[in-house]
Image (cartoon, rainbow, N blue to C red):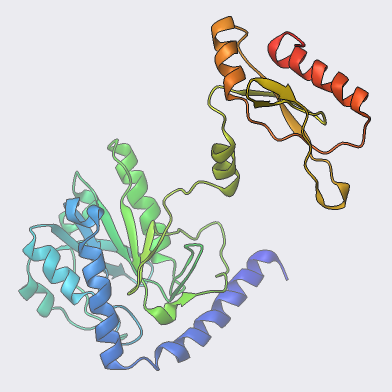
Length: 312
């Protein structure tokens, strides 16, 4: 079985499991969670500032309800668009002008409302501005920000089209927000392939999972260890002086199992004024060594010579 085939198979299995789980959510719980998510969405800076927004129209069961969000967006004067499936193959976002228009929509065979038709000029990507924000549905999400859709790929393809449209107009691509019930946010990783598009943020009743670029652990560590204008030159297992009442002396520290860590040798500007300031600021831990005192004193002399250009 190829990797791609395996991903498709695992997605199908996961969807089947989720359908059974989502059917167990009560009406009261669905309303409660949807209201909590609604409050979080309208507090987003990206929502408050957007002018053109597309909002999915929810399924009867197992999906965050979006009616309150649609009503709020219409009342706020935003240009609102809702999905319309063309011949069961592609999706467009069609302009909706009023709440009354929404109430007149017929239901699809899956039970959610949909516009009865569309005209070419009523679609979001015919508008010069495109979309600023897309509310993206999903069957499940994971803590890495991955999304499991319903299996048709409508939103993955549409988001890529919307990004390209924005790029042509020298605009940032639309901000993508997914809404997740507690039961839809999984601890296990969702199987994905190269066609799956991550939303920028996943809103849950309790908080969010953000896909805004995060600093890696390595970057955080590097920043923590940054020593202003010190420049790392090399690593060498030697003893480094610690200042104590202007008298330099070798100090040692015990390490478990006699482990001797390497000490960073630092290269500084040899400017004399800086040198005096730097000397007053040196606070370095001396590593453990099993060498004789004479050998350590020689290493000390070499270290000072390398750092400050003098041995005493």
